[in-house]
Structures are given as structure tokens and as C-alpha cells.
Amino acid sequence: VGTMEKRRVAAYARVSTDSEEQLTSYEAQVDYYTRYIQSKSDWKFVGAYTDAGISAVNTIRREGFNRMVADALDGKIDLIGTK
Image (cartoon, rainbow, N blue to C red; front, side, top):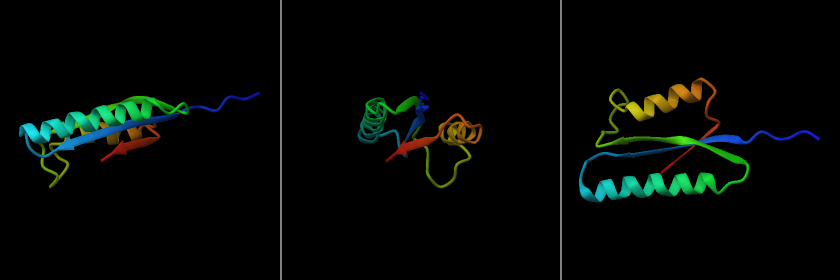
């Protein structure tokens, strides 16, 4: 009997400002996706990638996003959950 490998799933959260309201949203995003991914029996949570206070205009300064993309391209992530 073969076993099916779990899908490796990451979360990505970003907010554009450091305002208290935005940081609350950011924390809520990370918490929600972490718990959601961990609740799936056929998924393995591989981490949360984050960028706070970073504009969406371009990805140059979005270190969390760029690490996530590199890990996905290296075959470490199968699926990404984000808002």
C-alpha cells in the first residue's frame, strides 16, 4: 500500500502600512492561514512568508515574497494561501 505525500503549503501575508489597523489585519491573516493550513490532514504547513509596511507597487523590497518565490521555484512549496 503506497502513501500519498502531503501537499506542502505556505501562507503569504502583506500589509502596505505600519498603522495599527493594518498590523492587526496582518496578524489576523497570518493566524488565519496558519490555522487553516494546519487543519488540513493532507497538507503540510511549511511556513508563513510576510511583508509588513511594504508597498505593492513592485516586489524589489518585498523580502518575504521574494523568499517565498525562491522556495517555490526550488520545489519546497506546492501551494500558497494568501488574501
